[in-house]
Structures are given as C-alpha cells and as structure tokens.
Image 1 (cartoon, rainbow, N blue to C red):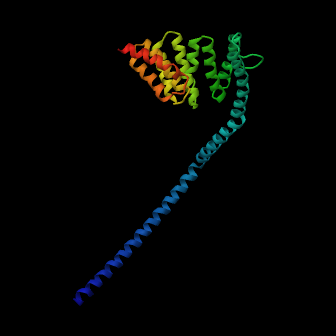
Image 2: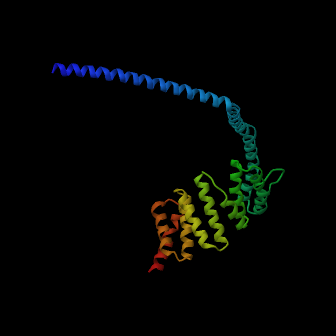
Length: 256
C-alpha cells in the first residue's frame, strides 16, 4: 500500500510540472495575442482616426443643432403661434355667442382679421406646433358651424390629440357632418368611435344617444336599444338619460 502511494505521488508530481509548463505557455500565448490585438487596434485607430473624428463631430453638431433649433427656432415659433391662435380663437368664441353675426365671425376665425392670422394660416405657417394642431380642430368646428360639412370632415379627420375629450369631440363632430350630408352609416360609425374614446359623463352618453337614434334609421334596432339601456344604467345623471325612457319604450314596441 505504501509503495502504491509513493508511486502515485511521483506520478502526480510529474503531471503537475507538465501542467504548469503548459499553463505558462498558454498564458504567454494569451499575452502575445493581446499585444498583437492591441497593436492592431492602435493601428486601426490611427488609420481611421479622421473618419472617427468626423463621426464624433457630426454627432456633436447634430445634437447642438437640435438644441439650437429647439431654443432658437421651435420655441419662439411655437410661442408666436399661440399668440396668433388666441386672436383666431377669440373670433371663434364670439361667433359661438353671437348668432346674428356668427357666419362672418367664423370666417374671420378661419381667414384672419385685423392683421392677425386665422386658423388656416396658422395650420400652414406653424406646422408641427401645438397651436397648429388646435387650429386644425377649431377650423373643422368652424366649417361645421358654417355648414361646409366636407371641409369640416377633412380638417377634423386630420386632427389628432392626446386630449381624450377633444379627440372624442372631433370624432363626434365628424359624425354630425356625415349625418348632415346624408351618409348615416359613416355617421353611425364615428358616433360609436367618439363614445369609445373615453368613458365620461359628457361625451359617452352624448354619442351613444346619437348612435342609437341614427341606428334606428339603419334598422339596427337591437343595438340602438342596447346603447340607450347603457346610458340609463351607467350614466343616469347625464342629460341624455332624461330622454332614454321614451326612446326605449318606442324601440321595444318596434321589436315586438
């Protein structure tokens, strides 16, 4: 047993020495490889340093240009657009509250007056600003009030906003315009879209009721009844809730 252990010990020592030599050799190879790689990297950087500097410079210029555009161009432009929008919106508000002169005031809100831009000018000149987006909505509503329904549809359909109430009102107004030009199927679809955008006491029952009424014309009696029942159940405090009982009774009679 003792001899077996002794022999084993020598054999093990021999393997260890060989293993150390191999490890040292591999380590040397690794460092040599790293040196070669480092040298190649340095050579590559030296060779292409002009291109690298140009790329870095381009990125820096783009970043500075963007910041400069924001500070020197976009923000002043956006501020100027709001000033112009306020005047156009003033004409629009006057038109809403002044029935006798509403048409001329709506036209002023669209085309401008007293040296100020109207909604249409703001949309063109200040494209991309928040004021231009709001001008698009107001232009659509002005056309709707002027009974120029096709123009109303064009401008309102191009309007988009993160404001859920404005989005809902714009879709509902498109529905009104389609209803006026005798396209009830399109009106029905837009009323439903307007009702779905945001659940609230104002726009949801308003457009559900309109969808129900026009749905009757389209022979969608069952669906119309379900919209009215939803108003009664979910929005009992809404203005539309005051009218649903009579309409529900009528539709139930039609379904008999």
